[in-house]
Image 1: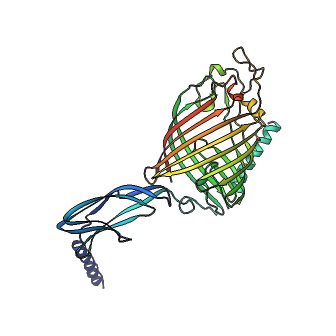
Image 2: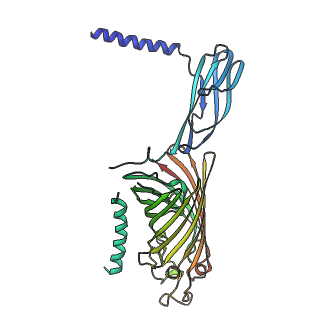
Image 3: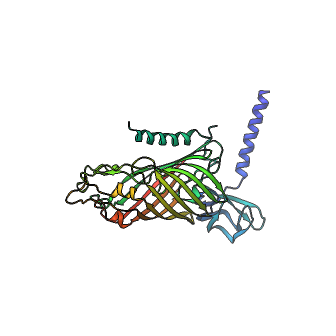
Length: 128
Length: 285
């Protein structure tokens, strides 16, 4: 019983290792990766540089992960960067994908934070 | 203890107790539209703290024209149903406000409130400077902080607010009235927030003479007896805030007050205006 459990664990661990080695490295970076607004719900602005690199020359595109809006494509390149004017009330994820196969290669996110949250949600404390 | 001081203590204690122990709150920063605490049942609180560096040009004679220093900024808002206590240092015009929301509907608000309007001072100037006796003020009687209660009518717009207040001193300091109208506007620009406000204050003759009059006991060769009528002032303030990260905010502010001739002509006043500017950081929980 215990051996079975041990093998099960080992198999799961080696499986995740295998998955990690076969998973493409996340070669898309966003700098900065956080935008801080003063108040919750307010538009947040940041000048973000999205950079990517790949081991092989290819045709790649960068898009908004939610809306699938294609922001820019590169032909026969293995690296590139885009200056993106972040202007949103919520976090945005970006995807780098191979335009020949449509396979997503890397993902990155610009997270949105704020200082003053809606008071009842975070900053108010109820005694009774 | 005299009857007057007993009465003052009772009024202050009653307001404090009412604020703490009574049972939907709409506590608000006094002058700005966005600081309204959302209505809630029961006890709620909110705070921020920070420190800043200020420069001030006071109107009292003998005070340093450009006084500089560091100061701590603590802001606390506590509410319990319709009662609230707002100790606000987010704005230079802020202060301690105890209030009760009578009506809060259709962007209109009517509040009962109690607050301090005028800082006390004596021959050492404004209390927090502690620079010893200031020669041009030597021999004046102590002017106490007042505590005024009354009504505030507020109309809120999307990013603006206009309020009217009529207050009467219950501390026994001057036993006079103060009325004011204040218009404020909040303007976001990218991640910045700019807050500006302009106000007109009117002070009764009792108020004006208590703080700025000179009676025969205080008069000397350089400081003649001075008695005057009701007075006014106009104030303008501007603040800028910028989020550094999720917890810290950079802030800068400017407050200027211009006083009418009834105050400016007082022998203990050196100029008809005051300026205060500060920059600082604030930590928000």
